Length: 431
Image (tube, rainbow, N blue to C red; front, side, top):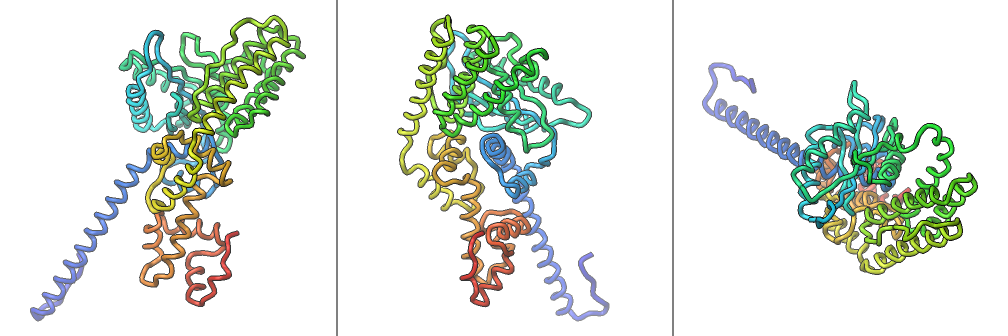
């Protein structure tokens, strides 16, 4: 019941009351329509947000407040057991890799993962796809990973020209350490020749080898980050150091060559994820002594380094400026790394790398700056409420907007607006 009137009542009172109720009903319907539109928008945004979150977690640093917002959107908690799976796509022997077929397969995997609620799928670059898989109640992550492997294999039956190998990292108790699982998943896929077409990192060595291998595994993790940031001198030092480690342990040259090759395959795949095409690392002969192995390894690393340098030279000098301009002009929209990558024809991971190198921040930080600066301008308009400003600059939650604003400027939007009124805004500076 909306309201009531007492009998008897004059006609004009009845008419006024009916009009008032009709107006309330219209307003309620408008609100319902707006809420439904917002809900529909969030449904469309979720896959994009998940993909971006995977990119940021595995390849970049995510501020807690950004992680809070995205987790609130996609549903989840940073304190959840999870592991990473990497899907390595390649053409079957005698077949050519059809990029359109690869894209269709990727979309199928993405849809399947979203329906199953197992986890999040990252962007596909260099024919590689990362997945973050969360533990479901009363299930082990190992069993969940195997279910996903079967789903992937079943989907591949529709694409006779495609093959896939799945590397699976160890389980970690929270998203804080999920990059370690990603690195392990890459290492688990160093040898894709095994018939099962998948390998758990924990199964890649037997228990007697485990302690002996820890130094080498730690070096491999460091190499992955060095490749991402283009520290090629350090990459060479570490891989040659890995060879020397095996030499000191008394390993045969053949074993050392195989391990060095596995590590260079990881280097090669990291280049692929950055969108850098390079010659596949392959020793042309079996080294007979360690000096020969070192010389050949350095030669192969130099080829990959030249590919990375060539890629950097071919990237337009103003590409970061273009990206900044695009973000600035569209900051009120839901911008993702994939959208930016499509616009400038670069890998999402490479864009993240460029931002870090040239600006010292990631794209989310820059997007936040643009939104907050626009919000400051809009606050000068007394006709606009803070809630209206929140939506106008691209945020969906006024409380979250307030927290972001306070983190950037040290005061709340309400306090900032009061200072505008009192003509004290000039004292506000970023922390």
